[in-house]
Length: 403
Image 1 (cartoon, rainbow, N blue to C red):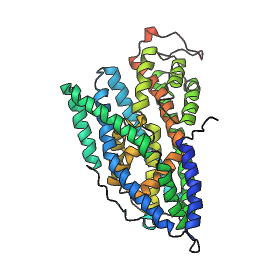
Image 2 (tube, rainbow, N blue to C red):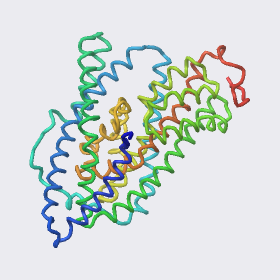
Image 3 (cartoon, rainbow, N blue to C red):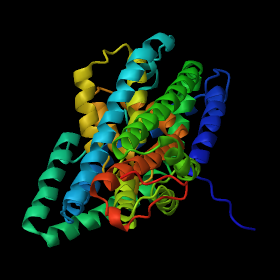
Image 4 (cartoon, rainbow, N blue to C red):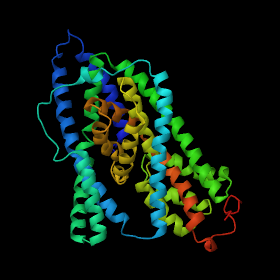
């Protein structure tokens, strides 16, 4: 019989159910294995140390070659795509911040700010990172830009190899254990009576993220079609197959063939499509940013921490940079954001774990928004940089290209 292969989302759901059952068992004083809660917490502490150790290396190994490769194909069209994608990601972060900061204080009434006190356990093994997150980020910029200007291909090959090592470590060592880590945290929360409040909170965060991603797409296509003098309704309609494909398979890279077909159906030229879609699959993280910022605001509101614009401005700009190469790694966006959550927003490791759980639960939502937003960027780029003479007079929807 063919072996059934579960996706990460399915594994997380199983981990949550298993964590509830395990926590219920370990939380009863009469249970013969009540002592097992200490073992569960010990495992959480060690794996949390490993996560914090890998984050700076992930940034160094992914962001450095991404910067070097982005600069290798100089040209105004490439620069325009990069700037538009980065601007869209930053705008998504601020949209999520303002929307979440306005709504969450009134709907998140049951705080879980004492979660970190209930779940915090001194790790049995201390594994300090080789550098902090900001050091890794600025070192990545220095080396990546240095490679561009000095043509240091030997150094580039070193960081290309480091990217492979980091990616394989995440894929084969971190992600397979991650569901057990989440299960251990859920078990701890269940045993200490924190799960009920967290479940209600997660549902509210997910609902708010859905609203924000839909609003973001409406704004993106409204602006794009206004600039390109296009009718937004058929343009959005043609992108729906890419949206639902990404929603299902949770991968921007795997959705590229479908996205390219949808973009071409909107009358976008082959040259523009071939540049924008593959590049934006790597650097355009608007939907993922909405999820991370929304979750961050929610957890800070629950913890009673001040949700200041200055703090989140710094976080959003830094996150948009560190997430540049994240789509090349499963859960790369949230993994690359962990260090920023701790260093900039003051999250505890336990809060980061809960945020990861909520993030993975709506994984496809952010990916679908990322992919659909790529189509809006393609419309803008084609309007100002496309070879209009190579395009047909109309597209498959019967609408003129509108150039």
